Length: 93
Image (tube, rainbow, N blue to C red; front, side, top):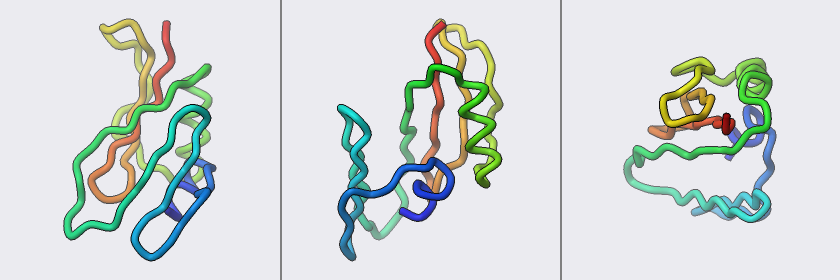
Protein backbone atom coordinates (compact mmCIF):
# COMPACT_ATOMS: atom_id res chain seq x y z
CA UNK A 1 0.00 0.00 0.00
CA UNK A 2 2.78 2.43 0.91
CA UNK A 3 4.51 1.77 -2.43
CA UNK A 4 1.40 2.73 -4.42
CA UNK A 5 0.96 5.86 -2.30
CA UNK A 6 4.56 7.05 -2.43
CA UNK A 7 5.62 5.94 -5.92
CA UNK A 8 2.37 6.07 -7.91
CA UNK A 9 0.76 8.89 -5.95
CA UNK A 10 -2.55 7.07 -5.34
CA UNK A 11 -4.10 6.65 -1.91
CA UNK A 12 -6.11 3.68 -0.72
CA UNK A 13 -9.82 4.33 -0.23
CA UNK A 14 -10.11 1.43 2.23
CA UNK A 15 -7.60 -0.61 4.24
CA UNK A 16 -7.60 -3.21 6.95
CA UNK A 17 -5.08 -5.82 8.09
CA UNK A 18 -5.81 -8.06 5.06
CA UNK A 19 -6.40 -5.74 2.11
CA UNK A 20 -6.15 -2.32 0.47
CA UNK A 21 -8.57 -0.87 -2.09
CA UNK A 22 -7.58 1.80 -4.60
CA UNK A 23 -10.34 3.54 -6.59
CA UNK A 24 -8.87 4.66 -9.92
CA UNK A 25 -11.70 6.24 -11.89
CA UNK A 26 -13.75 3.43 -13.43
CA UNK A 27 -11.26 0.84 -12.16
CA UNK A 28 -10.85 -0.57 -8.66
CA UNK A 29 -7.61 -2.27 -7.64
CA UNK A 30 -7.84 -4.59 -4.64
CA UNK A 31 -4.63 -5.91 -3.08
CA UNK A 32 -4.96 -8.82 -0.66
CA UNK A 33 -2.35 -10.18 1.75
CA UNK A 34 -1.14 -13.57 0.54
CA UNK A 35 1.27 -16.28 1.59
CA UNK A 36 3.27 -15.68 -1.60
CA UNK A 37 3.62 -12.90 -4.17
CA UNK A 38 1.48 -13.04 -7.31
CA UNK A 39 3.23 -12.31 -10.59
CA UNK A 40 0.95 -9.81 -12.31
CA UNK A 41 1.30 -6.82 -14.62
CA UNK A 42 -1.01 -3.89 -13.86
CA UNK A 43 -1.33 -1.49 -16.77
CA UNK A 44 -2.23 2.18 -16.48
CA UNK A 45 -3.36 4.38 -19.37
CA UNK A 46 -1.31 7.52 -19.81
CA UNK A 47 -1.66 10.67 -21.88
CA UNK A 48 2.14 11.11 -21.67
CA UNK A 49 4.10 7.92 -20.97
CA UNK A 50 7.50 9.63 -20.79
CA UNK A 51 6.35 12.23 -18.25
CA UNK A 52 4.50 9.72 -16.07
CA UNK A 53 7.44 7.30 -16.19
CA UNK A 54 9.83 10.06 -15.11
CA UNK A 55 7.51 11.04 -12.23
CA UNK A 56 7.38 7.45 -10.95
CA UNK A 57 11.18 7.08 -11.22
CA UNK A 58 11.70 10.36 -9.33
CA UNK A 59 9.45 9.03 -6.55
CA UNK A 60 11.66 5.95 -6.15
CA UNK A 61 10.28 3.54 -8.75
CA UNK A 62 12.73 1.06 -10.27
CA UNK A 63 12.79 0.91 -14.06
CA UNK A 64 12.45 -2.45 -15.79
CA UNK A 65 12.12 -0.94 -19.29
CA UNK A 66 12.12 2.78 -20.17
CA UNK A 67 9.46 4.25 -22.47
CA UNK A 68 9.62 2.89 -26.01
CA UNK A 69 7.31 2.59 -29.00
CA UNK A 70 5.92 -0.96 -28.96
CA UNK A 71 4.86 -3.06 -31.97
CA UNK A 72 1.22 -3.16 -30.79
CA UNK A 73 0.84 0.57 -31.43
CA UNK A 74 1.53 2.03 -28.01
CA UNK A 75 4.36 3.74 -26.15
CA UNK A 76 4.93 1.81 -22.93
CA UNK A 77 7.29 1.65 -19.96
CA UNK A 78 7.61 -0.93 -17.19
CA UNK A 79 8.34 -0.34 -13.49
CA UNK A 80 9.08 -2.92 -10.79
CA UNK A 81 6.17 -2.87 -8.38
CA UNK A 82 6.05 -4.27 -4.87
CA UNK A 83 6.53 -8.03 -4.56
CA UNK A 84 6.25 -9.69 -7.97
CA UNK A 85 4.08 -6.94 -9.49
CA UNK A 86 5.05 -5.14 -12.70
CA UNK A 87 3.52 -1.74 -13.45
CA UNK A 88 2.97 -0.79 -17.10
CA UNK A 89 2.47 2.82 -18.18
CA UNK A 90 0.93 2.79 -21.66
CA UNK A 91 0.14 5.65 -24.03
CA UNK A 92 -1.83 4.87 -27.19
CA UNK A 93 -0.09 6.08 -30.36
